[in-house]
Image (tube, rainbow, N blue to C red; front, side, top):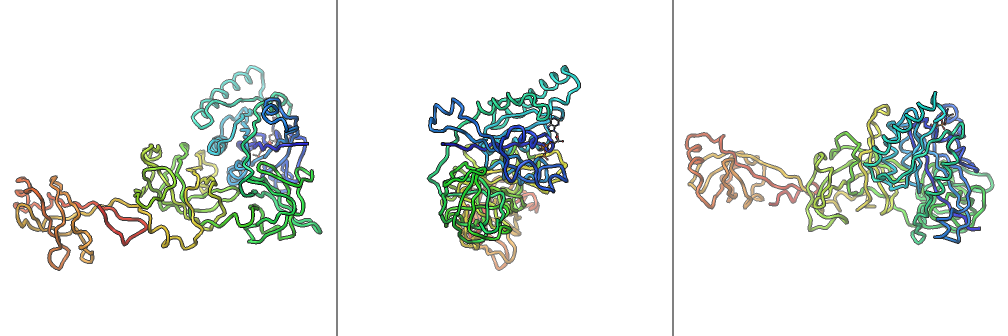
Length: 524
Ligand SMILES: Nc1nc2c(ncn2[C@@H]2O[C@H](COP(=O)(O)OP(=O)(O)OP(=O)(O)O)[C@@H](O)[C@H]2O)c(=O)[nH]1
């Protein structure tokens, strides 16, 4: 029997009814489903990803493309909704093919609804919207009016994202069952066969790990790339060891092979399950630790705070979230970023214009991780400010991007970054000490006493009165320099200087200073 697995995430604000919906939609539960953990039950909220499944006959529109698929197993990934668990939500969204956005009919769009839309949109997931709890209205009239208004609001809010308006909205009650049959039909008709590239190296995101005495250690998770078979040797990067795949199960069915998109439990030869609560399994030698990365910086339009170089953001990759120190810069060209012939301008703070990237200027972000992470060259990195107040009504997701460059070298700073030409535009100002001739002036205060004036020789300067000249030579033992002009200075300028009004004639030197290569100093 050929059964294909598809993963559908249930995302939405806390208490909108995601777990209740997962329950009514599923026929198979797993060891991690429906808030079984005692902590979850005590607090009454989902604390971790929950997995359950529904087996259906292959819908006709898929059957005609893939006649060999007899049944489809839909794995529902029930994500937490509470603001403090956004890391888990981001992790959950990375393993799904389609997302069901759950909204409380009476509360409408709430803060985490918006964050979930952002996450789903940037990961390019297919979207279905479910308005839940429609049994809670006091009258049919009130229900019809509220739902009509909410649908319009939802379409308006979502249409500005990558989802556009190509999504369906369903009105249901997970408690009374109203609308559930229509939702199931809607899910079936929206199913599609995502591209599964099985030739890539095996990679699995593990969400739970536990030991069974006498058998081994079980890792449950989703295969996000390639495939794995019983008896394969695989890497456990977090403990830097390899283990053999002893057996595998998909929702309690033993299988010999699992491929991209499958939810699977893999039994490995024993290791300490505590060493890997969340993590990855992969083909031997595939994953390496990454110490820094560059992404093209796609700013999330709902993020309302400043994005500044030298600040720190949380960065999520797969199920992992770590702190990173950021440096922003912009340049021409798309990827790959680092052509040593190109120069990039350092950005202190992203303003609105820079957020709207033009085709000629692309904003990049260097992320230097506080602790190294495992990522692959096609990983999506999502940066957020999770230390913002969880009760805030603002979106905490700031920007995201695919990896353009990364380094596995812990000592990368000196060895690699110094070849990058990321510059800051600097300006020095000085005053005229005396006029040597009408084409020659001696300038003071442009440099500090200890500055090496030699490296500035030949650089252009401009006077605040408009004339352009160049630094001809150093002058004397102090910090002065001689500046020459091709043309004679303007009469007005000479008059000001003769009258001793040196402060009205400012000498300006603009130059580029490289961020990662202090020695290079200046170019023009
Ligand atoms: N009346 C009514 N109550 C519902 C419905 N769906 C869920 N509930 C109730 O709403 C509360 C929250 O439901 P959950 O399914 O736990 O919500 P959730 O979105 O999974 O919650 P978190 O995962 O913690 O964000 C529970 O008390 C449910 O019984 C519904 O359709 N109608």
